[in-house]
Image (cartoon, helix red, strand yellow):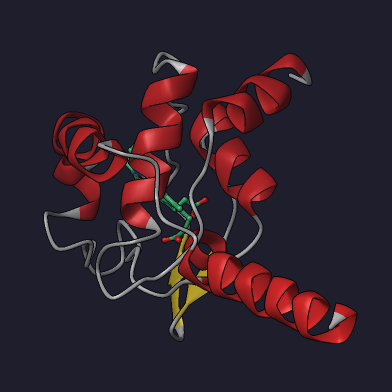
Length: 133
Ligand code: HEC
């Protein structure tokens, strides 16, 4: 009997981790933040502009480590990077004027748009990274 209950608990836990629902409203809010603060450079479909602004579709920066991603938004980026065999060296300005919640929403949005599928970014994670600056 105990084994059955334990097994059911494990299955339930697995089902919950697999689903990982995004925070309510984050995609809608993030889309608005994106339209005002990122779209001009990275384009509505996240495809970027050849040789100027890199794509946000399935890049290691967008889909990978969330701490590093948050820091790109807080500090901007000014280094030679290569994405899909194309190199970029145009600087991206810091977006630190955005609130922690706005950064969380816009990153949750880009991590779940343009063919990306990722976990959410929370405002608390952004607060932690901003304190280190
Ligand atoms: C003025 C144009 C501009 C704006 C505005 C801008 N970016 Fe960028 N972004 C760039 C450039 C240029 C790079 C490449 C920087 C480099 O090579 O060092 C970049 C790089 C990135 C990267 C890492 C590389 C990649 O493509 O995955 C991410 C992630 C990113 N931007 C997200 C955003 C988000 C989210 C916003 C809005 C909050 C934003 N950017 C606003 C121009 C911009």
